[in-house]
Image (cartoon, rainbow, N blue to C red; front, side, top):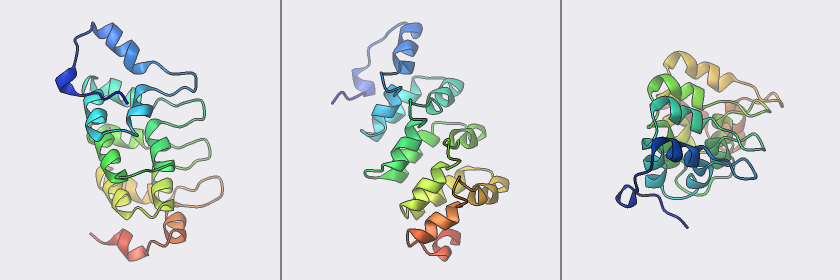
Length: 166
């Protein structure tokens, strides 16, 4: 597996670097779609190569199935989900975090998927990164099945008090 680390960086003209970072494979996946299942430091380094607006653009790029890299990761999590979410969201200015939590075609958000997996730590982290005025709206957003984040959290066995603590 190719590892992207700062210590092995090679200097390329910006236009070539951006073309390589934003390139999509035949499934529409970007380098971030691939890196997100690898090492957290690779995610951070990749995003550090971009300006804030370019980071958001890359984070919001969708593959042919309609998934951003983050949506794909939380839908099919492996390990350290909150670490991966942090690696992406911490690289974005606070004003862009909500934009990175975009819905899928079925109106599910990243929060729906982490709740479905009972990942309370990730839910709390995401809610702490968005403006307080948006937390309730995010928790009450209904997907195409009419389910909210709270529906999925309870279905996965998460207790309501664990979501509301601290």
